[in-house]
Each structure stands twice: as C-alpha cells, then as structure tokens.
Length: 171
Image 1 (tube, helix red, strand yellow):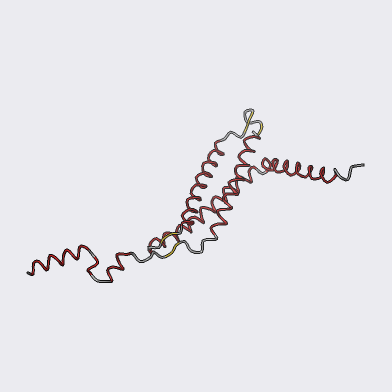
Image 2 (cartoon, rainbow, N blue to C red):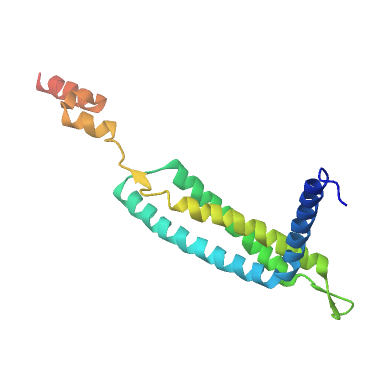
C-alpha cells in the first residue's frame, strides 16, 4: 500500500513530468501549425501597424505631437516584424530532412516550432497593447513666436532695429 504522505508528492511529480513532456512533444507535433499561425499573427500585426500609422500621419498633418508610447510601439512592431521575417526566411531555407530526405530532422523542427511559439507570444502582447491607444497624439501647444506676434511689434529685435533706422532717417 502506498504511503499517504508520499502519494500527493508522487502525483504532483507525475503531473509536472507529463506536462513538461507533452509540451515539448507538442512543439514537434504542431510544427506546421505553429509556423502558419506565426505568419497569420505577423500579418495581423502588420495590418494594425498600417492602421495606426494612418492615424499618426493624420495627426502629424494637423501638427499634433505623437505620444511617446505610440512611437515606442511602432518601433517594437518594426523590430519584431524584422525578426519574424528573418526567422521565416531561415525556416524556409533550413534543411529539415536528414539521411538524404528519408527522415525528418526533429531537432530543427523542434527548434523552429519553439521559437515560432515565443514570437507569437511577443506579437500577442503587441496586438493587445494596440487597443490601449484611443488617441495617438495631442495638440501642439501654441508656438512662442505666434504668441509674441499677437502682442506689440516691439517684441522682435529685428523690428527694434528697423524702428531705430526709420527714426534716424526721419531726423
């Protein structure tokens, strides 16, 4: 009969080993699915970036100032997009067969599938963050030169020198 004290520990141990093993095996079994899903997620991210870039362009046309977190998100998207493109290019060129094509190279499939999963998680975080951007900019405060122009013309040094020259020429 099993010791009632060890039973919960043994059960927990078996669960941990089973979950870890099934996760690792899942990378191999779902290799094609993970690569296809990464391509779809990367395309979704590119679409969201284009939409946000349109809002940014409109805001810049109005002379608004773009929020720093929006600029950072765009930079992060550009970075992960470049990483995904490089990854997919490497995945396409990789030799995923061994023994002259007779069997699958499990180590490269495992590595590519696991890396695809990590990149999908990064993309998911960026896609979730884009929903936080209700607005991408704020109006630019009135430039100092315009506020001075509303006052007297004595505010500019060039005006003072012109007035001085006029007063000297009138005398």
